[in-house]
Image 1 (tube, rainbow, N blue to C red):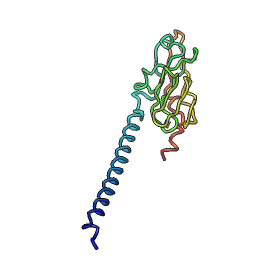
Image 2 (image 1 turned 30 degrees about the vertical axis):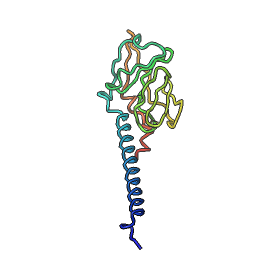
Image 3 (image 1 turned 45 degrees about the vertical axis):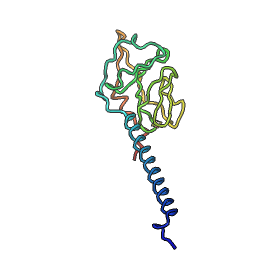
Image 4 (image 1 turned 135 degrees about the horizontal axis):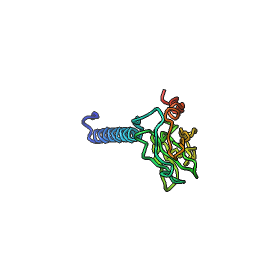
Length: 165
Ligand code: FES
């Protein structure tokens, strides 16, 4: 009776099985690496300024119904004007901390990691997030200039931290 190594049919099956396992393993590994890379790209970087009160210019620069993302890198905020109420909103998703992106066509902040969506006020439209985006009202001076209290914004507890422990 031939052994596994001398029976050509058994050897071929063994090789195919081994090759298939390696291919599946490599596919799973490639998927995991791609997933990690995608998550890493969506994780927010620390803003240049995270505390104090910062000037963001005249209120007229933020028309009603718009979200301005020019200060995400510098201050970690988007400036939202929801019908005249101008708010500074952190785009960091409260589910697990990925960076949401404002989509003007859908009028929503959309998280690329697990699909949470938030409206122009930062309120949850679709989970898995259950907490609104962190936000603070802007402060308006007599000349119409707006400022944002980053200390107040960033002192809010981050709900997603409980998932990272
Ligand atoms: S981190 Fe945004 S939905 Fe999970």
